[in-house]
Length: 115
Image (cartoon, rainbow, N blue to C red; front, side):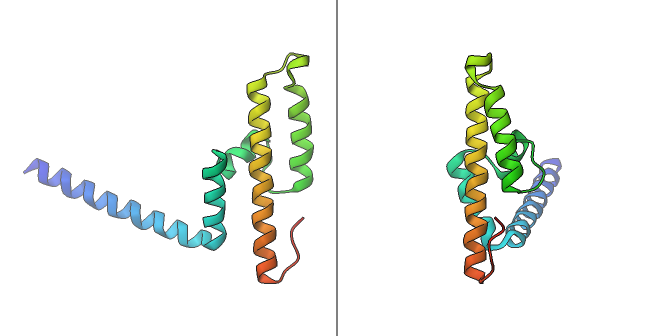
């Protein structure tokens, strides 16, 4: 009897999670699919890349400024960490890819790019 209750509760929770996941994917739209693919290729999510470079919004100028600073302070020749420096590079690459995705979406919709 208890196993059935737990099983039903688990199945209901799973259905709710699938529904929430589907709704989130629909809300992201087409850009979300490209962004998710970029996250899979780079190994970093958009949010992780933003955290690494300490940017709250996608601004090419702010990303470049923070990238240059973090790259320099993590240079091995000044006592920095090669591992952290490589994370900074990967985060910049991920955000650059996001800028390309946004520009492509804008072109497809006939708007001027954000950059």
